[in-house]
Length: 153
Image 1 (cartoon, rainbow, N blue to C red):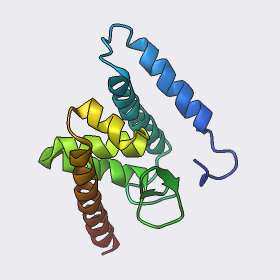
Image 2 (image 1 turned 180 degrees about the vertical axis):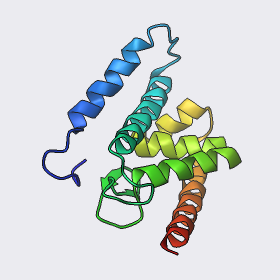
Image 3 (image 1 turned 180 degrees about the horizontal axis):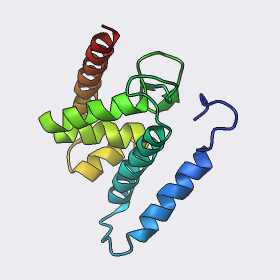
């Protein structure tokens, strides 16, 4: 969120507030544990950020959208070709090939979950999460680069 200009209407507190409101709307949810709650919260924050970017009518590949880099936590930067909408599209494509890897990225990147929390939520070992994290990052970076290259033609 730090990379956004002055007057940007979606601040970190607004993101958390919106996620909270959506979470309490789901009163009938049977929370299994803390990891389950964090996994759902991660998905909500992803949807809120992507919906916000789309509502601002940002172009699919750039156009002033929030630029992000794929690291262990959300890091806003000016690096071209890494916007939320492109990342969301790439995650959707990854989910068609390997849903678990997509969920690992979603939980760690959007939700800020640790390797251990992600492993607990997905019922896999921390080693599996790290393997999925590395492979998914490589796949997403390749996908984002190929989309950027095809968009530049």
